[in-house]
Length: 245
Image (cartoon, rainbow, N blue to C red; front, side, top):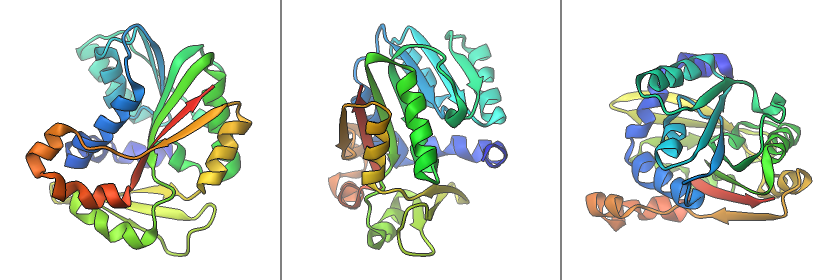
């Protein structure tokens, strides 16, 4: 997985140009996170630090980013050198990460959907829980495990296609292909049921689990119109997750 992301760093950065990333992903995610001023936040699967830097700009006092891909972290550190924000970046596998602090918030953007088994998902959730204060909160934006494959074709006009080679079952890979400026590349997620997710969260010590539908920013509605976004909202290829410890 690390080697794969090392090879697509430039394409991965371009994802932030997609309208759905600008007007749905970021808006949904940051709204779920809420007020960050004065908070400590651990960003797991931080990639090249796109959201990590936003957390700092929004007033978080301690920000740590963890990412499996060394090249992604290299890009994040280059940005930190260019504009110092006091962010700490660590190369590590979230499944193997020990407790590195006690944070008020742990965040993850498209991390959990890389878990191929319930054991891997549980390890991720245990890492999240171990690094949260007793009253801490976990917030994620994630591939929607409950999306019906019949609705996958509706995603195409938003710059992505989703496909599977067999019926949905625990551990089945889901190929997500993005098209940015005429260039295509793929990422691979894995299906685990919502029941498996909730089992992993509760086993890791979370008391409350909330699932949130994606929302479009006012700017997105103004630029493209509500009708353009309706298929995305109806089939909901992404989902917000909030867990309370």
